[in-house]
Amino acid sequence: MCSASGVLRRYLVGVPDPRPIPIPASIDSSRVPEHIALVMDGNGRWAQQRGLPRTDGHSAGEEALVDAAYGALAVGVKHLTVYAFSTENWRRPLDEVRFLMGFNESLLRRRRDELNEVGVRITFSGRRDRRVPRSVLRNMDEAAELTKNNRVMTLNLAFNYGGRAEIIDAVKSLVEDGIPAHKITEKAIASRLYHPEIPDPDLVIRPSGEYRISNFLLWEIAYSELVFNDILWPDYRREDLYAAIEEYQGRQRRFGGVES
Ligand code: IPE
Ligand code: IPE
Ligand code: MG
Image 1 (tube, rainbow, N blue to C red):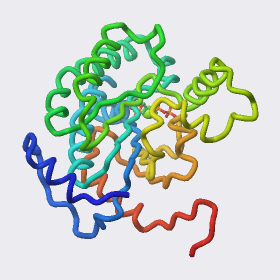
Image 2 (cartoon, protein in one colour):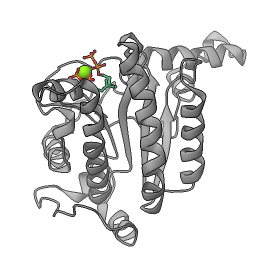
Image 3 (cartoon, rainbow, N blue to C red):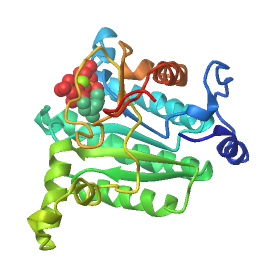
Image 4 (spheres, rainbow, N blue to C red):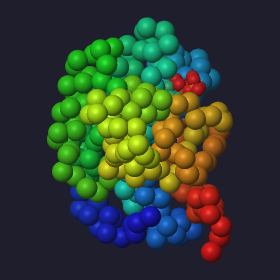
């Protein structure tokens, strides 16, 4: 949890918000989730409903992502992780996979300066395997390098990301360092995840009417609050994020204990 005020002050001196709207008074600024994880799902269905190719849905999702990111910034979220491409998404038709690679690359190129100016640190979670084109990796590295000292908010892009792959990678790195079995603890595994410095998500949001996790942040979401809704990702806007935060604030988190 964190207070929105300090963040807002810093944020307002940056690039003007393209769509400034008031934050609902019903949101308690002292209990804003520190880390929100979002599954950007429903692009294909959004396009199909309009008689468009699925890839147009991915393109239309950019505005949703930028608006949600500005909304998260405005309300004082410290970390926003968005699911952009899963380790299972390679199963899609080659044309769509190619489009998604190029689209994510160009999105980074087009948006990194603006995100940098408003104090966003861009990071990535996922496997850097040979299937990801080099130019995409290069753009990821450039965006991360450009924004590495920013502290207003982390925008963590889960790209070629799988929750199981992340756990496997963490365990492998412990084994490679010769860590003995009795030292394999929760803390040890957590320390080898892709971004150990980012706290576990307080809130996971899955739009598009699917009620599943789809291999997203399996380790980190052990005690996250889950919010589902029917909005297809390209239609998602910060108002929807605010509604999810309100729902989150109405939940009682117990972490296995009892209410004190
Ligand atoms: C999410 O939208 C984007 C990615 C998974 C890359 P989808 O492409 O999954 O859209 P639907 O779920 O088929 O509608
Ligand atoms: C999850 O959506 C992955 C991303 C949004 C990147 P999918 O569309 O791939 O998930 P499933 O196949 O419906 O579970
Ligand atoms: Mg989908």
